[in-house]
Length: 134
Image (tube, rainbow, N blue to C red; front, side, top):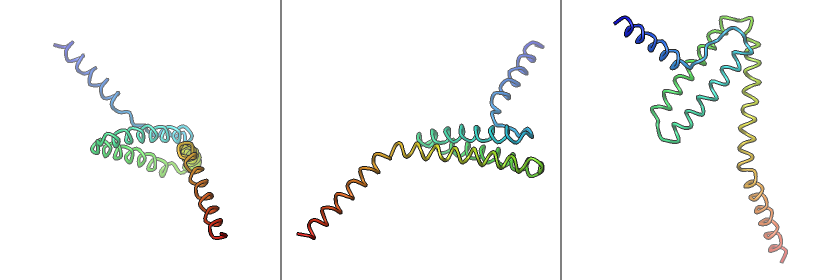
């Protein structure tokens, strides 16, 4: 019976440690900013996957988890004012790089289409000018 209880307790501990994948602030602003950005990127991908499969409940849970973790970091650095500026600076840089990466990805996906639209518009304008001249 003792072995069973010990095994059950170990399983509960293992399960709890595996399911708690949220990050916690450590006080190191650079590592915390990176950890928060990585967490948010992972959760954003999970939310996108959930939405693409129309799992709105799952997407809502992910959103709430993201809000909770972000608030935890905000609250932590609101109290830890000496490192807040550094955290905000590093997080801002990471966010900027992330947005640039998404913009470049979208440009890669739609860039060719934009060029074709621009060509079509130019050709249409040239044709209109020619017709007016005739």
